[in-house]
Length: 209
Image: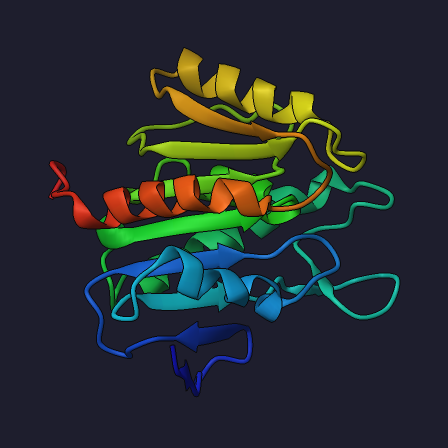
């Protein structure tokens, strides 16, 4: 995939400027927009547009960015972070409809993907090593969701994805959880299943359109 110049300083785009389908990537706490770009060629075909969004706030301990403060956690920042990300997604939807967009987030980015994406007509959501925000409940329209988490994760406990799965199922949206023997990462062994999920979401007709 060719790296396209982006008019926005808060994102990186890969793949064709004119595309029918899109993958949006949300990095984790302390990383930056380029952190997940290596996944693009593994998950989507070259004709899919990839947008890696940069979190709005600088990380407090050096390089990298954050969606909201985690040390200490400042949940009062969450409503503004959620609203800002939704606006960015809706702006992206003007060029590629959200119904043909899959969003993937890791860790804090996974939590933001599920939170801000809830209620939007996305084609699918992937949350790797994610967690539910306080009082989060999935809102319709519900889209397919895939979860991935390491059973020995020392940063975000594996139980966080079990709780996400429970909340999604309670809302009427079953979600598969790809568990693996490992820590706070996106496991290489899970990538084929994640690719199949992303491809299915982007390739299947959307009954809501």
